[in-house]
Length: 118
Image 1 (cartoon, rainbow, N blue to C red):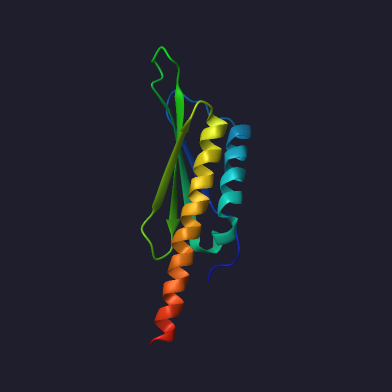
Image 2: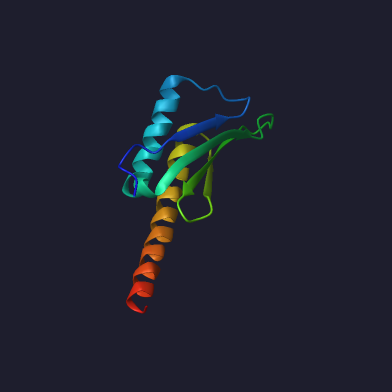
């Protein structure tokens, strides 16, 4: 098991979004908080931000896709779309947290049952 270190967060944006240090710090903080409880099992989280329908007359929606790289598992991806970047990031982080809890708790339970019956 790796020592407890912060999870690396890689942030990618499309051409319609500007990326500045304060935004990157906020997103990194939200992601780090969401995966804190399983950080020793995650090698990195990639965040992809894009604007959908940027030229649509009714407005734009920001899509946030988060992909977590987990040991002994394929990558886990979730997304959330909202009218604001902050809401999109918060929604995706909540989904990522719930997905990781479900996956890793189930994985731990299966591992314990396999050891008991071996």
